[in-house]
Image 1: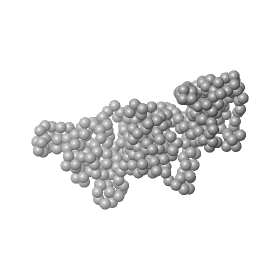
Image 2: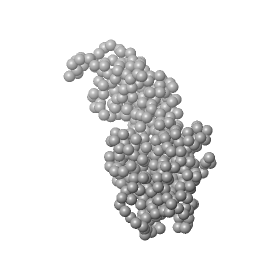
Image 3: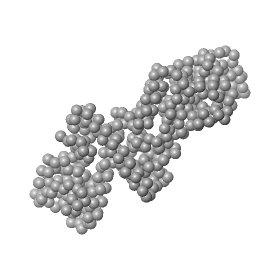
Image 4: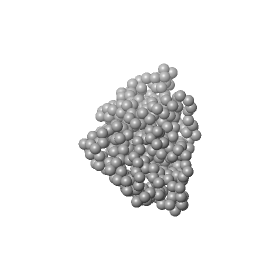
Length: 434
């Protein structure tokens, strides 16, 4: 009566045999099971429930607690073990906690399957409209041989975008070399880019090819190009126009065939206005312009990215996970991510290192992320997050069923789950079940 008042549809079984008949003929989410049952004991019914659907939540209750029985029940797959007398709120909390845990595990399993089958291009992970648009821009840039300028905040994944363009272009298989213009002193950048001859400067004991020669036939990524000194910008411009270059201390013009991809986290137009970046060089590199949005503008991708990084670092640290707990996922999707994807990646690695169970908990995350907002903003955000994740899950489920012509068993096999899991998800999303 209490559970019906709480909004649950309840089937009643007077004994273990009736419970077995219900479990074998009906789809049941939760079994609240007394250990002492006539005709068929509670542990036997527990095993039958897990046999028919491993995802069924079983909560055992008993008035005669025994350590051996409790251990046997938990080993057989019981979620919880309640000892009489218990309060209604204890029972409700156990059921809600079980449903939330299973929901997180099933959602994570779907995300992993999405990662295996779609929503990635050259290491770029996502399914939001923003990321789909970006993938289209990558394909457009990859189809031609023009120079590319990638714009975006620090940590958004500009280098990953550059790799995706190269790997999907006709230059794949040829070198992709990167020069971080912000990490090398400007006095050394020229030698790194153009190479040098013996005696060109103190310490130049032999000839050395620069990156322009080493990348011949491939792609050169000039990361943080706005950090280039103006004199070096002028020399680079000449090379772009003539497709030849000269080593430091050398006289021979060396031809090269290199596609240039440049990136910056600065406002390059502001740099031009202040005279810190040459406008003529900008026009040379900005044939195709690609914008990479910050993570806060594509929150729909956070769950998928989190699953991706959880898989990566779970394997690296030798840990197996069933997913991210609901509270932890709420914190991840709520956080503004000033450090973008790089910060999310670091947060998941930390969580994997700290996690002690099969789920990443909220306390495993860095404190700046795990802190919760309060008031109406928090409630509105949680509602948005739930609706977004539900929509994405439903879309993927519908697409998987459509690919297998509505055949639930084949869909379950493709998802790597028990047949009952897609059936349960179909019921949750109001899809017709066979």
